[in-house]
Length: 460
Image 1 (cartoon, rainbow, N blue to C red):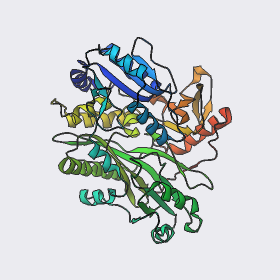
Image 2 (cartoon, rainbow, N blue to C red):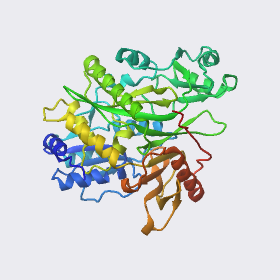
Image 3 (cartoon, helix red, strand yellow):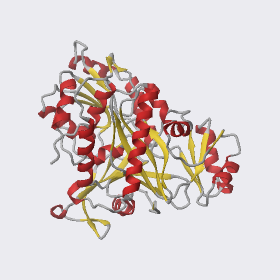
């Protein structure tokens, strides 16, 4: 067991004295964290959720809870619908908050996706400034890569009313092109504002989408290879960088959509590429600290191409890959630690020691995970016990279970989740082909409509 108690104690010292309003799209996602808070003696929090989510819900004694019942057609739509609902809380919810915190001294623990602000008069703590959210703009990121000394692929910035097809012909290196929206409608992720254009003469759908949702479009070559990310954490005097994480991404036949399906740590790039990715994270982290006064976790997403790692976007916040690589480290407070850094709390953070512990722990305990958003309303949860059989996910009895395949409600309708225990997650293999078999199994069992999936291919 990896010992992370020192950092848990730091988070407890700054957070335990306060009552917290916590917000989450899925209540089930907080069950384990709420249990730890109770065991550590924190005051009972107030949790506002969009939906129940998938998995075990927290016991009533762990938190006061409210479910707003937000729903939308897409993942980003679900995030935005929940954010809008928080800004217009019903009177009965506001009254319950005041009963829970009558003197108004509680603090607001916003989602790690959100910027700083307040909720019913309670100010956020450890939330990222809005100016950092703007760093995620896919249009301006090329300037940041250049300033930080990070290699990147060619691209063109085109207004949606311009000749996107002509730009695609110029940018195509033989595998088509990828088009990304700017932040006209706010930050975005999960590939929802990204389109894969194999043939610019057959791009009417992508052009229409860009004209509806963007003021500028980045057109770049489609990069063949394993989609992956590298995380860093910015401290006052050091930038820690961790291990590469595979971003599980699929294409669907005849579609211009790229399906983001979670993150896993079973894949290993060549050692030299791993160290280059870690060096890129350190360069980016130093640039963020020096030029944007940044603190906390961030991620550089990109593709391991035949020529090496090329970045595609920056998330100025923790990404899914940071959570999956610390899953096997009991009580490691990855979100809380980042909040302490953002809030400029003084502490003995020991960043070099933390970096080594996370690297060794994530290498020793792998994590095989996958998700698939389902864009129809789902009201019931289902769980299937599964195991690996020659690289395929198959159903099994509970006694032989190595992981779970779950299907249930989400803010965007429904979600399929695949999760294998670290002790049963393989190492040295690409996750996407394995996750595809699990999503196919979900399709067979629950008629999810996921359909055929084309995994990314390792080319390095």
